[in-house]
Image (cartoon, rainbow, N blue to C red; front, side):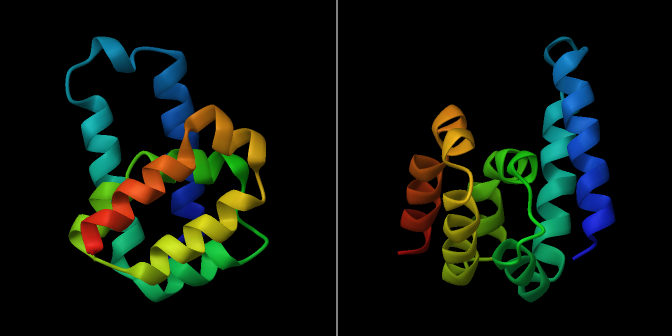
Length: 111
């Protein structure tokens, strides 16, 4: 997985949120599609990154927006497990973004 591109997408998402995302139809959907494409491109690398200590709270928050899309494109329990592991490192982010219920929903899509 291209971590540099992931971080660039996170910066773009933050900018969109702070500026005009709600006013421009389709801009968030385009962002989510690109993020999903990046994450499923090499699922093994994505899982390894999520398990690493390099993943940040902002990255988990942004990735949480596409859990369902990722699992729809590439049904992977390993992805869910790795995302849970990463999320546990950021309890405040998990609470603020409701991450565990989002993971539960994505996991149900696999079963």
